[in-house]
Image (cartoon, rainbow, N blue to C red; front, side, top):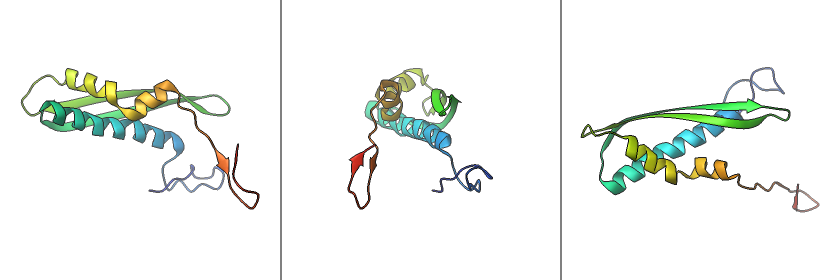
Length: 117
């Protein structure tokens, strides 16, 4: 996976994903996995899953101020997937971690040793 800045910004070449895109991927990818775990646990077979995540950014420094995830899930028996999606939403790790505001520690390393930033 390539992580880069947009072309012309801080030496970026636009060759990969930026941080906001990766946050969106983390939200949607984690939810997709959790949706399949929940379906498996309750014995529902799923077909296609389509997930779209829109990340809202604002401020200086730029922060994620919100995210909207839209989910479409086909069940192979034709049943309504709303309950399945609701159960997955209750257990999805990335979204629930972001909602709860997890602390992040950044440490520096080098000849002077590691220390918190």
